[in-house]
Image (cartoon, rainbow, N blue to C red; front, side, top):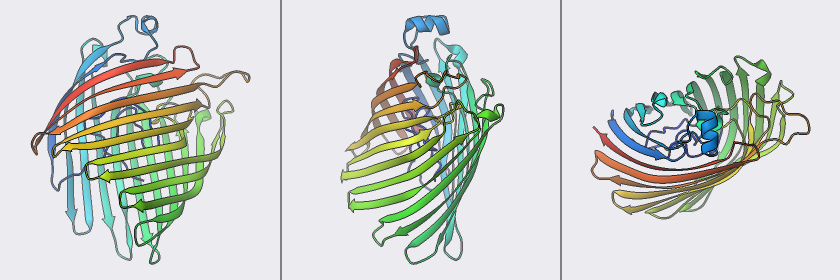
Length: 403
């Protein structure tokens, strides 16, 4: 299970296309092709947002923010690196950034954040190989997931390791383990530690198709409220199918069980699944589509969890040798199994949100060192809870210079 870089100019706070490790709400995540070497860069950007705090309307803005003004614009200044080095069979990657957001109206939200990812892709003797990784994140909590929007800084440390052993001509056994420590400055209700582990067994054909079985386990412990503690286990088959030279389908179906120490938080016992299609009809065009039913804590940003049904499609079109258009459409139905800090009576209806997003971005690599990105996006959330629905539109432009 990879940890992912997220430092390109991409839609910020757009969506939560969730996997266990793949929140898309805070930053759209995208791995990059990195040349050997140090590869430092600087970047500057401008973003305009019509509804910065993701509130229902100006009346709610007055109630929560003491102002009817919902829009704001901000500048982002960033410096980072994206490096890769290789020594024999051992490969080392180090990516990181420090950034500063400076707001025009809501200056109390001016913020300095950072992300870092260090990875060792190792290869050993006797058919062993794997990965060790450490990830650090210092980001703002998503305003849309707060009852009262405020500046809440989240700090996360994550350690993860993977070891794989080729046990036959076409079979591989993989072991995984991880640990995460998550804290925030806006209160300790989200502070937690979780330990994870897993094992998978795969049969891989000579043309790259594979079928396997995978088991995962997570033990989550909240530092200030042990009643929110949980365990989650899943077991099920996986598949990778290269249907043609231009089409690859990957998927996993699992029986998943999640148990809690707190009665108001419902346990889950059922099927989860994710299917992903990668289609490349031409050298200049690529389409990635996903459909899923998963359990998610929305990127560690709520103290309970939701059953999330969703679909997304992300086409990319290379319109020139140095220019590309990226599109994104997504929809999620989130069925919250309990609301943080709220114990509902037995007859109450659980919260359900329906979230839709879309956007388009233009990437222009003017030279090997200088690139520009410009884009627009929009989103809408409808909820059966009062003051939980909203819509927004954003426009952004970024310029990046690599050394």
